[in-house]
Amino acid sequence: MKEMENKTISKDVIFWAVDAQEDFMKPSGKLYVPGAEKLLPKISRLTNAAREGRVFLVSHGCIHETDDPEFAQFPPHCVRGSAGAKLVPEAVAERVVTIANESGGKLPEDLAQHQQIVLEKQTLDIFESRHAESLLARLPRDAEFIVFGVVTEYCVRFAAKGLMERGRRVSVVLDAIETLNPEESKRALAELTALGARLITTDEALKRVGAPTELARGHSSRVRT
Image 1 (cartoon, rainbow, N blue to C red):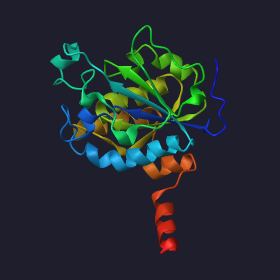
Image 2 (image 1 turned 180 degrees about the vertical axis):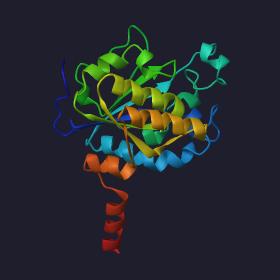
Image 3 (image 1 turned 90 degrees about the horizontal axis):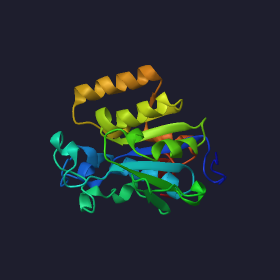
Image 4 (image 1 turned 45 degrees about the vertical axis):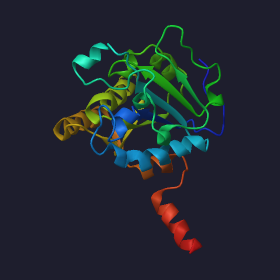
């Protein structure tokens, strides 16, 4: 297995962003998660750590065909080629590659040439997609995987639980996730913490990779004035 070799990327931490797409994050979205737009400043700061080369960012998002079976459970959303299927700008780094959930999709030879890998999926569980397992196998096994995005009780839960089931350490960024059902969210977070996940803040996640926190930024502003 070939691990990342770029020394500017932390091997101790991997950021893992879940479904930060227009249809979920924006009030105009087809399956808007109420309050999700308030996460955008946090997601932007977390993504910026990848832009600065401090951390490797794995992202995934739903990409559905117009007749997707999932639409029997949820309203149509994130249809291939639509504006709603795109990641919000706040969640996109500069050097990014997207891997289709198809047999012909291939991971890059050298992951370290990219700041961000985006995996497409058609179900709630990213580990049901074709390339998640092979990508995970090429990431540092002892890293802390820091998960954020939407929705807490669905795809965030599946991602965090799937990582832990595969022997990875997981932290969930509590102020960078949003839910559709608060009670189900509480149960999901209780399940994840019982399995060993830690609940942290955006500032704590950024501190892990040496990125500026709100406290540091506020102090810097006061010094300048």
